[in-house]
Amino acid sequence: MIELRHLTKRFGDRLAVENLDLTVQRGEIYGLLGHNGAGKSTAIGMMLGQVWPTNGEVRVCGHDVTTRRQRALEKVGAIFEAPVFYDYLTGRQNLEMLASYTAPVVPDRLGEIIDWVGLSGREHTKVRTYSHGMRARLAIAQALLPQPELLILDEPGSGLDPEGIHEMRHTILRLRREMGLTILLSSHLLNEVEQLCARIAVLNQGRKVFEGAIAEATGRQNWLRLRVGDFAAAVKSLLAERLIADHRDGRLITLIDGICSDQIVRRLVEQGMPVFEITPEAETLENFYLGLTKNA
Amino acid sequence: MFLLQFRNELWKLFGKKRTYIGFGAFFVAQILMCVFLRYSEAQRDLAALLEGNGYLAENYISALTVAVYMLIPQILLLMPLYTTLVGGDMVAKEAEDGTLRMILSRPVSRVRLLFLKWLTGVLFCFLLVLALGFVAAAIARVWFPWRDMFVWIPELVFSVLDAGEGLKLYALSQVFLATNAVVAFSIAFMFSCFNMKPAAATILALSVLFLSLVMDNIPFFERYKEWFLPHHFRCWLHVFAQPTPWARIWESQCILVGVALTVFIIGAAAFQMRDIKS
Image (cartoon, rainbow over all chains, first blue to last red; front, side, top):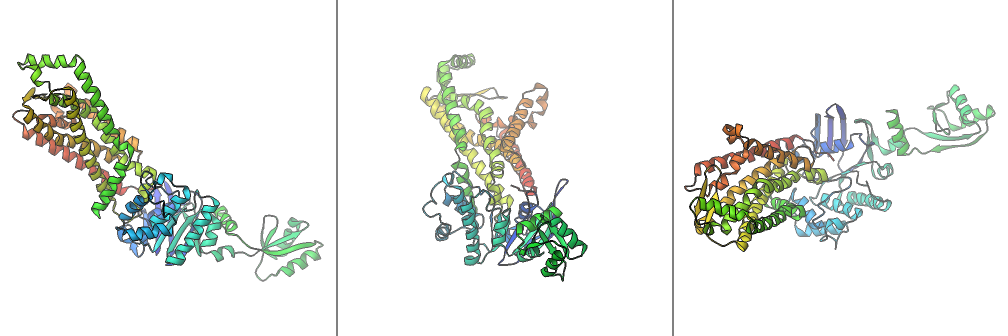
């Protein structure tokens, strides 16, 4: 559904996106991670034909966005952080207006979508009276009106309270389950991405530093939690014996290929260091992400 | 689709309260000017001018004469202010608010969107001018009688007309006034298409117009007056001249329409090339 090839965007001297390759397959929820200024929104802007690439190619739904933008975006819905509407118009007027830039919408379809997002009864009220959560629902409604196959969500949880984030997460899952949409989700909320996405890409300073399945990210290194009297001395000894590959946080170790945890325990006990605990530590996406961006 | 999108742009423009600032301000200004003309020495000076030229003042100090007199300063100062306010807002405010990004995530071409917005602004200009002309005549009629008309025309001395002919030409002059409004609006609209704040677009457009006005009034630039917009803006007053200098009026109209289209094209080119970011 989305293909980026050698995509580069330069704003003056600043390189916002550098040589980015990325593929989002039909039907998947794909996460785009990165801190502020990493290039996520610029990349999304290029996917929607709002930002012109300096180099490279962007294809959405099989069409080149730069040369055939209108065809490429026919089946695309988008939601941006802190959704903005015409406050002085009603929710329904906003929907009619935004939908008309894709195709006219029949009233039944409009009613159906309003009902789906749970705004029935409030559609004739001016948007200035809407809460943040209601605006988020209106944003989903406007994205769904053109019957999209691809949904691009740029920080959709931004500014929402925990209840709103929970609701947004369930809505995204419903969208995929009930409508079979392909979803590109850009977010800071690593926990949300971990729960929603099958595959992710991590951007740092405009460059892609990781692309792969969530399982690949969280299961990349098998960390063991080791509780001993003197962690520093234990690590020194194990490194000298070439039994561990790495250590961190004063409690975690990772083994060299072919080494089992019983060998670690035996070695430490032989050296007179009692072992109180040795247990597998699940890698979180947060740790993986922080490790990646720190190293980069 | 085009009409639907045009209706939407009208919703957006006329749904905003600030769109009506111009209408309200003109209404208040006209009442104040009319009362001032009615009860101040200004009326005596006008009578002296008429009688000095051999006309009976009481026949010509009429609702239509006063309406035209009230329009002159408003067209010169207030109308550019309100049309550039709307023009400066049109694209830049949407870019600033973020609604432009929402629209441009849809399969609509930038040029089409811009043309719709410009057309909406042109309609606003016509409505503003028609309301201005109608209200000026209506308010003047409250304090002044319905009699023959006297108009002082820059470059052409003055003209006297009977009430019926005067009303016809007054209505026609509104069409040419609307062209002036469209030019002022289009200049602000062009700046609005660049990456800048709405207020900056309005101020830049007003600067262009006022600079042009200042240059037009400097005697040393007399030979270059055709290059300045106010020279062409004045063609609405030439409608009242007898005989009507149609060649001069159409020349100015063509230049004004040309300026409006040129600035639209410049704005569209800038808008097409720029990146729309949050």
